[in-house]
Image (cartoon, rainbow, N blue to C red; front, top):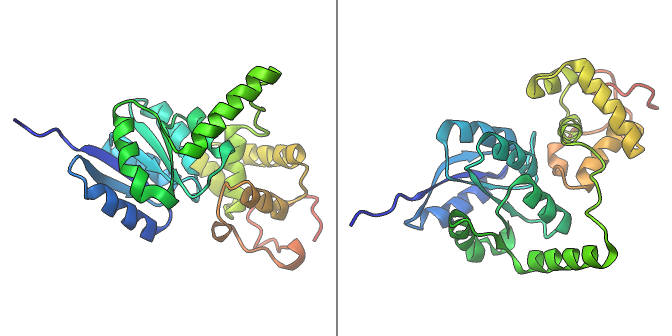
Length: 245
């Protein structure tokens, strides 16, 4: 009797030590094998195109594209690909966004040694895998919506604006952002102006603080601001027209 082909896994996390530890967990199982690694969401998308994995395990907070952004794109270009979110964030909003992005499960890094293998196998059986806190959140949210007749609140910004916001905070120039997203620099500047208005922020420094606060990136992925939020023309990747300093 021939053995079943192991599940081919793409693993994306911006911390090498985390990837190594997770890979040890997965590769120790005969039915699971990591075929590609990525250090950010954009690399994960490229690796998926190259290696055609069965399952993608994505961290949330990564540079360039977050795991949630990558999950949305992967769900669009490879709808047959199963997706798991592996994160340190026990956060209901991330959980609901992960489901909306096409993820089949949400696993906490703090219990990855206990839950990750089970989550991978459940996902490959087309079964959802939710940690206990996520189940409670899902039930609580459903009951609240039934009782109050409310739906989930609309997101403040669009997917495209979120991509641009993250890249601005990470120090990319308008031209670099335009090249990454295949749009024009003028479109980047227009989105940037809309973001400032929507979010009630003044300049790039406040955009960066917002990105960190909502968990789109880690502080060490962002550019260093000058004292008092001022920046020179050379150090400011995206110009702060009208900003003080």
